[in-house]
Length: 183
Image 1 (spheres, rainbow, N blue to C red):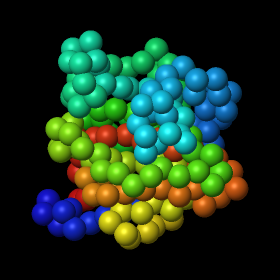
Image 2: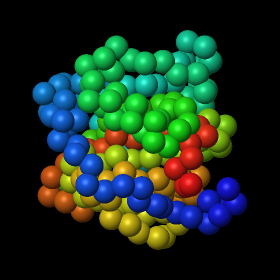
Image 3: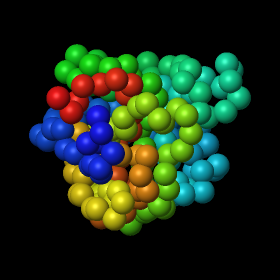
């Protein structure tokens, strides 16, 4: 796992049919307004909106670094996303923790930051791109993430995002403990 200390990004798959998941998002657009914590409380992500599907269970510990998670009521309305998560676990193993669908408007940015805290120390971060294309910059190395692609990136390094498309970037961001994606 030491080689991962040097890696910044890796594309796992391309050509994934994301249209059924994107349709779920489009038909339930108001879900972006249920929990506005990401844009309201995290300064570097103020241009984003998110739909939390599996989130930190703050009833067990009062901070966002907890490993305890809870499926939100909203998650049940996204069966195609659930189906993809099941496929991911079957294909790459591991235990999926938090899952969010994240929207970034055309020309939007997520400002440079490192995902810090004990929660992030033993998990891998993945993006499944549902729409648009965007530059993911990790330690000054840029890769373009595009719709239909599944990516791992090192969120323990400085990273930021620039939406390079004239449409919203919508992606599923999820964290996995002990996956075997690098094998």
